[in-house]
Length: 498
Image 1 (cartoon, rainbow, N blue to C red):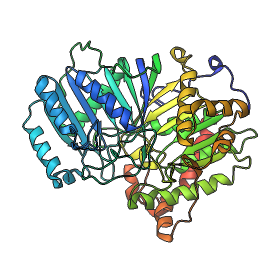
Image 2 (image 1 turned 90 degrees about the vertical axis):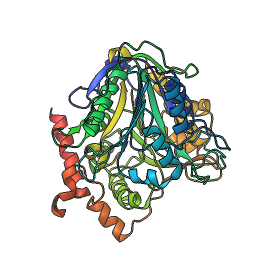
Image 3 (image 1 turned 60 degrees about the horizontal axis):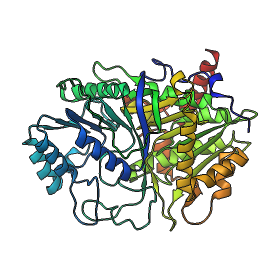
Image 4 (image 1 turned 180 degrees about the horizontal axis):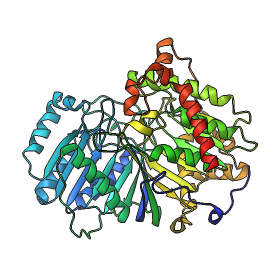
């Protein structure tokens, strides 16, 4: 593998107005892995907020425990009632995607808590339906006093809590009805400083378009809400914010996230490490395939779930992934492309919900977007990015390396030093992973199961995963994986000319 040049010789990938919305200063930032830690730290931070707790999410459940115990502990609903009682002037504003909203009222405990919230002046809870038919609001953002923000893949919802150990028998990994759910891997980023205000602006705009009401401005919040026991990974850096949004009423379409994925793939020199829930974008697949055709291509390592969560998602996503990966394999003569599935000590699948991308340890991306058409042009998404080629970020590669090492060591069931030593010797992610894979908690190669006729038809024609709001209405002759693949290659050619 070729050596990566010193970071100062590299040009920034982030370009506002092209592949990101804004680049803003960040005082402190840390990537939090898995929801057990995230729920712990966000609970501390919310309790310290003085003026507003703003939550913008795909899902949300009042029955969740931030600090779960084997017995019934304090639920999120009770926690917010306590916060409202302790500081009635602190606003608690919650916006949840409207799909499935009625199911909240089918659970007596949830319905009772929503009624109590409705009678609490400090709490506002709304369902978000401000998007075209077939779209979803998929961002997972929390903003406290416009001073601290969280952006990533973790919703405060049922079935998300887990620890990095992903134990086979975790007593606290249970739904509100007491039923256990499978191990769940996720990630998010906590940030402070001006970038938190930028995410607050994004959240406030979403609130206005969903509710037709403006949030009250924050006035001079100076209190430090950063959790005292949360280690700081990045200080005084610049953070990019990238979005996806479908065209709706007077809101124009935004495709910054798609552009950034393509630019990150094009910028890779040694490797691209990705954790993601889905892989169905033919444009992204075409970009990877084109890089693999080079004389000395970068490695592409994807960590994903074995199957999508839910029958509908499996029909739409799994078959498309099979077809795209087989197409990529035709370009992968040097065997630089792998998809792995993490498993527990007893061999049970760990569901990967994280949306993490790391390129050459110089680009770090955490957010809500998946590698599917919906996240690139249909659903509302938000990612945050550290580009080490930006002047304030020159010292970030070491911390990015540490994060990548920590993630892969977690999946392989080895300590971080063992993985780091293996990578130091080989310079290859794939070689290091293959040398450390074994029994117990490890990474398994994805076995591409042949899709059935119905699955293949749905995937090939993008019936459930269009790339724009108009895609549901497109004739069959104008949609499909092959057409998107060709569009991806054409876009790459245009990018190389400019």
